[in-house]
Length: 368
Image 1 (cartoon, helix red, strand yellow):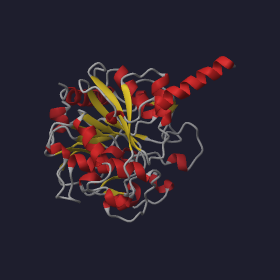
Image 2 (cartoon, helix red, strand yellow):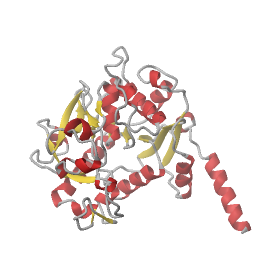
Image 3 (tube, helix red, strand yellow):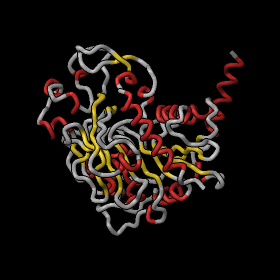
Image 4 (spheres, rainbow, N blue to C red):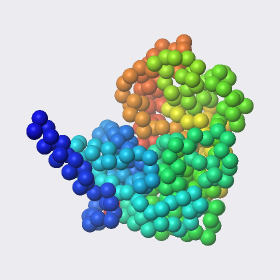
């Protein structure tokens, strides 16, 4: 018992001393850094899986990872510090931004601006992950269907993206990427929505309600399955095997991004993994649409018209279970449970790997 208590005390000391002000410390400027927003234990685990399996094919000896978050976020990031310390993740660091940030400060210089610049100047790129709904007031709308659980995270991430890209909500502001147009900015699901909102776009707050005039789980499941972006069966029946998500096809637009950058056939309609009920409505003027849902109503990908390494998708290519067999799940009551991995056909899996190959290439292309 005494040995256990000493071990726990030592671990608590290590965690308390673990630096969460990385870019305010004496960090090495000889090393390259990639930023990961919202570095929860789950997101850290996802990135570790991607790197270990050479999907995110970056060299830890050349690029270290820095998880960035805001002090107002709901998540307890001491758990992330503990995870990093106890698992010996020596190439991971954390940086907490503490400047006050409210809704009316998002689209202008604010107390976080100095941190945004320091992070930008000392990194090669940033990845934004999924999450809950953005407060509609951030894009000038009343709340009709949104469920926001962590407004501090959204103010922070949208403001950081605005500082990086600029936007129509403050055209006098000079974006940071003007100083380094090749800087990498990418993301998934909420990451794409935040990118669009930051640059001046808006969102559909609920796809079934606003695009299909469907207002209940019972009518939602009657929408063609390829055009459902989450699973509403879980709201109708009790079944532990139900997935909360959907595997569905996407189609590429006439834009050259997937054919030219990712190098897949533009006729391909790969299956992807989605878990969202909101989507882009008014696309910010700086973006071109790269992918659409099966019926063309939901925007599934965008790229920046000026900055070549700024792109994002609405689906989730980062989910570990897409690349190896894990637990078996099903979408509808009549389905036979299967792993997510087995739900992808060969070409869809190849597409996901090629997409990660492109992300890896643009990141490594920014190293010295």
